[in-house]
Structures are given as C-alpha cells and as structure tokens.
Image 1: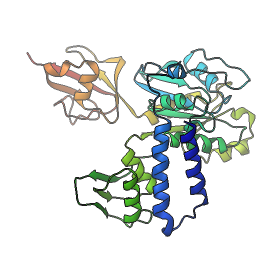
Image 2: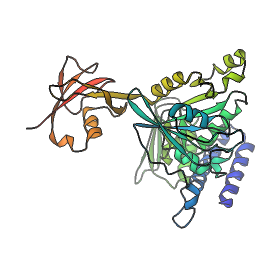
Image 3: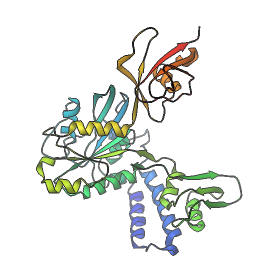
Image 4: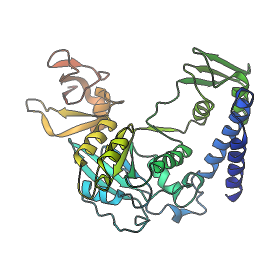
Length: 369
C-alpha cells in the first residue's frame, strides 16, 4: 500500500508542476487516468485473508426507506445531531474522535423511516487510506444523501477538504452524471464526436486516457463541454452521484454578520444541534433532497390508509414499482390499478403497471380472479 501511496504522491506532484494549457492537456489527462486507477486499487475492499477487523462497526444493515450519512471532521457535532433527531445514543465529548464506529439511528418523518448514520470523524487523507477513511467513505457511498456537518466557528476550508476526500473516493456531490456516451467496440480505433464546442477534450487527450485503460477501439460522443475528469468517471463506471446538504452547526457561537456570509453557500442549512435551532428546517431540507414519493394504499371498499404510506424513490415510482415495494409476488396477480391523486386524469383512473405515480397518490390494486 505504501508503494501505491508513493505513486499517488508522485503523480500529484507532477500534476502540480505541470502548467495547464492545450499543449499539456493530453499529458494531464493521462496522469489523471493513472491517478484514478491507483486510487481505485488503494481503496478496494481488503481480501478475505486479512483486514476483517478494520471494518468493525461499519457493516450496518440498511433499514427504513432511505439512508442519510453524517460526514464531517471530528467534534463538529454529528453525534449531538444524531441524538437530537433520533434519540439514539452516540457518545458525545469535548475531545476529538469520540465516535469510533458507525452509529445508526432512525427517524420517522412524513411517514417515511429515514436511517441516519453517524460516521466517525473524517480526516484529511482519508481518500488515500489514512485513518479509517476507507470504512467511513465506503459506508457514505451506500447513502441516499450526505450531510456534511461543518463547525461554524472553524474555517470553511473544512468544506473543501471534505469535498476533496469524497471526490477522491468517487462520490460526486450535487452533480448529475456526465452527459456523454462511451461505447467500446472491436475495431475502428478511437472516434470522438461532439454536439458542442469542446474546449477541454480533444482526440489526443481522449486517446491518451483510453490507452491508460487499454481501450483502443471506442466511440465517444460529447453532448456538453466535458472534461478529462468526466470522461474518466464514465470509463471507471463506479462513481456515485448523490445530493448533499452542508449543515453548518454551532451557529449560536457566531455573529449575525458571519451567518449572512455563510448564507451565500449553495445547498446550505444553518443549525445549532445543542440548542435545537432549525432542526425542523434541516428535516425539511433532507426530505426535499431525498425526493421521496408517498403512496397511500386503499383496500377495496375501505378508506385509504394515510398513516403508513408506501415510500418510493422519485426515479422509481410506477405502479409496478409500487407493487414490488409491497410484495414481489403481487405483480403475478395484478390486473389493473385504480389511482386517485395528481397523477390521475380523473378520479379514480384505471391504469396499468407502467403508470407513473405522484406524491400522495392513493392506489387500489385490483387482482386477477
């Protein structure tokens, strides 16, 4: 591992020394591809032969409808926040590294069960295997949303450092997947086409990156001004794109003028976990960023059950997804569904399994006789 870290440092140093211009673009692209491969090797899960204890406390069973990870430097108030929101006990103290394992808690909000994970304090260099960075960020990758908890009285540079660590482990915050197509083929070399003016990628740079991955035949189509990093992300194929909320804690210890400066941050939510300031606002923001859909069930000749909604992802909210969420065998008996709500043209509307549902729709499943 020390050899891999040494190679990573050598490449980073070389990238730092290299001027960024058109003449060096393909060389920098090659270095970035080498760096991405080394980081993948460094942060790959340990083999069965050893290192089992390294992940102790991090193998947390996923429960509820969605999972939110609390990530931040030591002593920023993650444990206090978890305690206040869920009632789960996570040790709180004034010294750093109080939390040494992953502590889960569950909160019920708007009918959805949301699992919160208090992850051990991240440290600079986690992406390179320092501390327990591998376990922390590996668990963060399983979340549906990340809360980066920052201390309002410490420099906002913590934000950039944590972003760098998460980016280094393939987590892309508040970003959409690159809008480009990469298709391998058997022959014909590397072909690059673009529907826009490409200022970051040219054919030489693309060929340099592909050669590092031993890919010599592929068609690449750019639909926006993509960078070398974007192309590497698509080739790697293991990037996670998830929403992130920058939770600024301990705002009771700063001035109103300082709070107004922090208010300019995008994706930001100010709180005081200790004094329970704006925790409702934080929960509203978490709900917004998770983008969940609540569907109420209606048994035949009975009123809808508004107390226990079926929770669906906004990306998977068809009637078929609804049936699978209730029970995998329900589709075998499915005939049609009756829907009341904003997705229905009239109430009720008879629909098939491909119908897309909206938040707070009411659904009655009619089974085959």
